[in-house]
Amino acid sequence: MRSTPTWPVAAGSLALGFAVAQATGIRPLGGVVLVAGAGWCALRWRAKVGAARAAGLVVLYLAAFAASHVLAHGIGPWPSVAVVAAVVAAGSYAVADAVPARRAVGA
Image 1 (cartoon, rainbow, N blue to C red):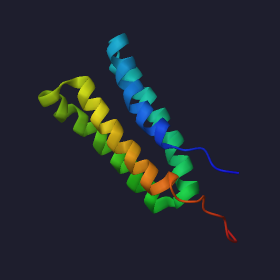
Image 2: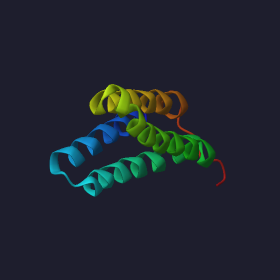
Image 3: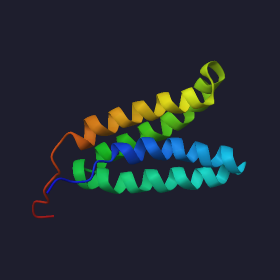
Image 4: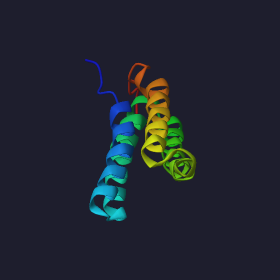
């Protein structure tokens, strides 16, 4: 059985988090969406590719979130979110989703 891909959740939670924050005017509410999405992905990444690569993907996610704020000054908020979501989707796919699930061996 093939495991659930993480790239849609990783990218989607960045976009949905921004949409929630913008629509409600409550930035921490958007943050809840981001934390939930990153947490869900982190658990699956760890199971698929191990703790080190999962940590790297979480760092990519957080760096993309931070970069979106800087990038928004030049290209606007939604284009910025689209760019960083695409980067996170590509990274998630390349590192975790394109490889077969890791099999637990004696641990």
